[in-house]
Image 1 (cartoon, rainbow, N blue to C red):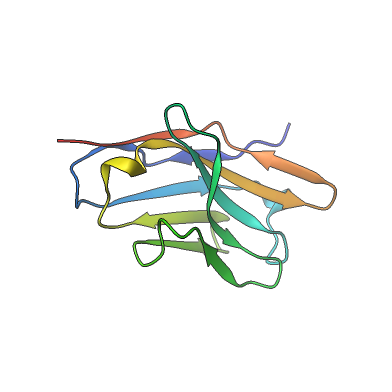
Image 2 (spheres, rainbow, N blue to C red):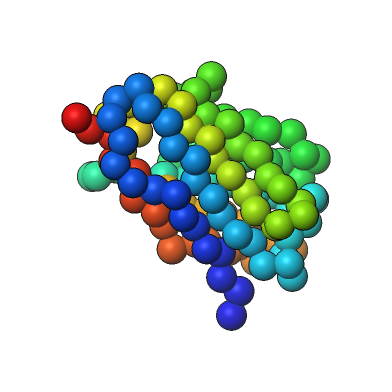
Length: 116
């Protein structure tokens, strides 16, 4: 069974930073496979946060532009979400997502809480 493994969530104060990691199995890690981070806050629908498109471009949701960065390390098959200047409204469970051929894969989610 293909599994994405996320880590790096936690409690952080407003204005702080966190970096989330997602280890992607070699079998589905490809520069041409879209990879993304989503999040789902309390009482909210899941929303797209950041994406590596199949062409390698990066896109971001409006609410995180200028604060979050998606990156990846092809030597370790890891996708990162670097989050700066965190706000309470960034509180959510963050999910890693990979689209490979006809399938979509999700991680189990990692909780990020931004609070005093």
